[in-house]
Image (cartoon, rainbow, N blue to C red; front, side, top):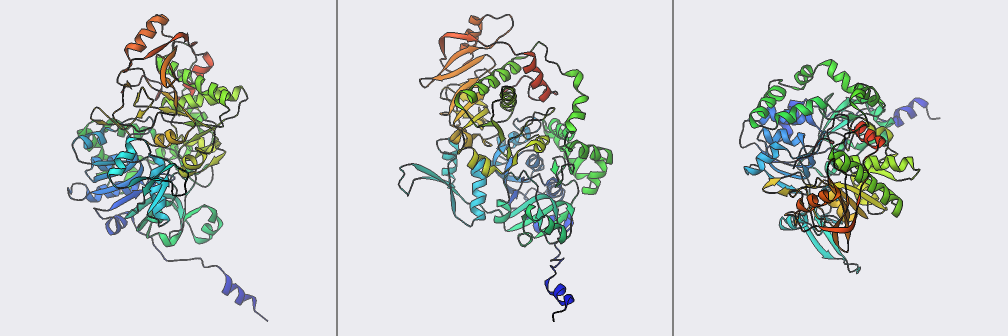
Length: 587
């Protein structure tokens, strides 16, 4: 007869694996070597603590530089550029992103001085390069890039080609070359000492860069045992055998946000900290002072947290809880109303929202993809208009938000409060590569510049680097229709963009601060003017024609758009009480 004790001994799952725990300083000194191609994974958050430690270790050594591949090169890369540690950036977006997208002064200065090189990708093609690497393939087919300056640039670099479909459809297809980073860094919610790592949704770019990298370093908020890992195995995105080092770093994503397993776990982004960084980044001297204060002088992560202070960190935790937006909004109620006057940007937002809502009803669109900036607010207001009329259309955002109802108080496209009201939390690959092309999708996009053919430029203009594509290039190739919002100036509405970030053939409508331009017989025609105080319809038409970079055609029966209603103004002002987006835009 078999003894029960023997069965327990034979079949009890092991509770321990190899110990891969390191300190932050040890992991940087042992694993992160200059000259490497480093992948900063931003699946759930940013590994800021490692970035700070790299700066402490290598800043001031001119020959110690890195190449990085990252979905969005924002503050996480900007501080490394300011520290002189970056040689090349491979990214879909390189600019400031929170709370409002705009060019990064740090990156612009470095590009103009020739200190860094930027290799532009679209967001989906970036993910596909990492996916190909993870699948151990040499390349991956892609529907992105084709017909834009991004395809030309990447073809010259030898990482993109177009071929005839070998299966005889007669179509051209794009091929994007695989990439395998030397080192991958990711900040997760929890891991055991062996490296089994829990990543909480939304998963963004997912784990492809991790699985294809030669060396993987995981930092986590919580260190757990193997029984916890087994209990949450469905959330373990990185198996231990891929991981070389584990570092336990609470608040390791600060100033970015972090989501835990339970709704109340984690912490919100530190808005004040990010705004302080953005103010400092405007000049080299103030940026260097910021680096000294927040990175060099604090010595280590413990010193950094001590400088932040316990009360500040607790407030960030409280701001992450579902419904926390209500408390924050209470303090701003007095500054919000739906009363006039309204600004040209507010009128443009309302007009664009009405166009989007009308198109959803007219063409039975299933999905509204929200872009950055004002285009995001317009999509949110359109969603509310449709909701009131009992018309169903799902809102999605590129990193994996699906079917959400935007929460008030923060107009950022990836407002973490919206996670709590998503119907599904998916990935970039699913959002842009599967949902977008396989649904009736209407997209709302912004533009640095747009030309008479609808081509959008958000990458390079007049010698300046702007921000890059993000998901816009992918949207231009795969959405069914696009509505663009852009201020009406000759710098924005140009005859021909110098860089095609996003193809314009899907752009049907351009909504500006002066009017609505609709594509008719292949040309954009001014069909509506927006109301402007003390200006007649004829005067607004003349101003629109004068401030367009091409010979703008005017419809015979130009209509006047009604002013915003009190409810429309109230909704967009509640979404953006601090006027991060609703203030006047500048080029």
